[in-house]
Amino acid sequence: MHKEITPPSSICLFTDHEVKSKLKGKRKLGAFINQLIDHYTQQESHLQYIFVTDAFLLEMNRKYLAHDTYTDIITFDLSEKKSPLIEAEIYISTERVTDNAKQENVNYLHELYRVIIHGALHLCGFKDKTKSQKAVMRIVETEWLEKYLTLQKEMSNKI
Image 1 (tube, one colour):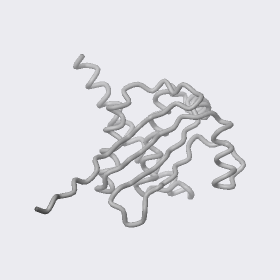
Image 2: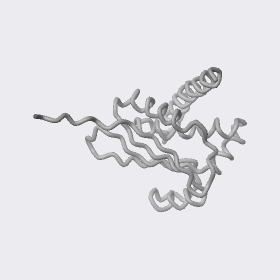
Image 3: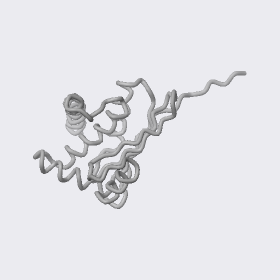
Image 4: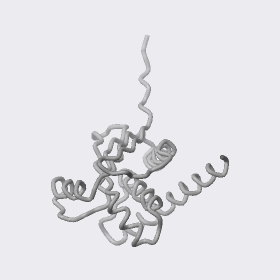
């Protein structure tokens, strides 16, 4: 008898490394991020978001990307070529997120959600190297951020 292989289901995990991300509703957010990726790629995903310090992410930026600058996020796509599964580690500096939130005049969690979505969009093929790519990225980030915040609001109204 031939046994069918079940495709892996999507997973999205969030881990604090030497910081407190203050992230709430991780399961719902993870499911939302997996839906975002499926929307653009029609692929399952295994994602690990790791929240870190500025110093940790700066060292990674120097070591792996040869950039000597602070950044809020680094996305490592670990997927194998032609694999039906997207695998990635996404590192986020909570200190950069805090500073970005102050600069953008939004609360910390709002900015954290935006950066989380930003990382997922990179895995879907969105880029942000040129001015026009950055503009498109910001539009799509905002669209998905608004969807998530609306969903969150609807869920809190049901309680």
